[in-house]
Image (cartoon, rainbow, N blue to C red):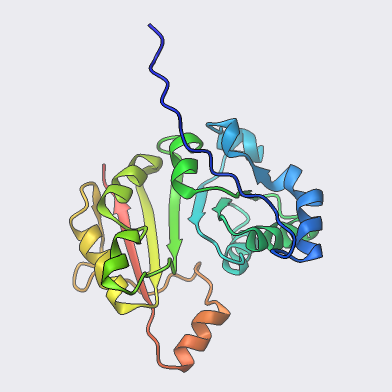
Length: 229
C-alpha cells in the first residue's frame, strides 16, 4: 500500500526588485550554486555536502549573517549551516563567504521548521543556535514566538546526544520564557542550574547591535542546554 500523500504548503522566497542590493542579487547568481542548499532536494548527508566529516553547527535565523560568518572563520574545524528567510541577509552572507573562500558554510533560504523536518538527518547537529529571535513583545503575540515546547521537541531528534542547544536574547521577558520552556523540556539539561543562564561562550561573537544595547544598559541572556536523550 502506498503511503498517504499529504500535500504541504510550498514556501518560496522570490528575489524581488527593491528588496536587495545589486551586489546581493549578483551574489545569488555567483555563489548560490556552491553555497546554497535547496529545501526541495530533501534529506542531506552533511559529510557529502561539505566533503568531510566534522562537527555540525546549525543556526536558525542568522539575520545579516555577521556572527555566523565570524564563527565559520574562527572555527574552521566545524561545518556550519545557516537558515534564513530574509533575502538581503542571505545575499550578503553568501557574497562575503564566497569572496573569502569559506568552504565550511552552507545556507538555506527557507522556513526553518521545513528544513529541519525535510532536510536535516536525526542525530547530526552538534550545536544548534537560536540567537536573538523576534521576542513578540505583546502578550497576544506570544504564541508566535519560535521557542515553544512543541518546537523544542521537534528539534531534539536532530541534535546528537550531548549536543548543545544555545539560545540568546536581549529581552529579559523572553529569556524568562526560554528558561521556562527549556527547564521543563524532556531530554534537555543545563549545567547552569543555579540561575539557568550561562556566561556568553567565546565562540558566540558580540554583534554591533549587542554592543549598542550594552551601551544603553540592555542585558543579554545566554542559555545552554544539552541533549541528554
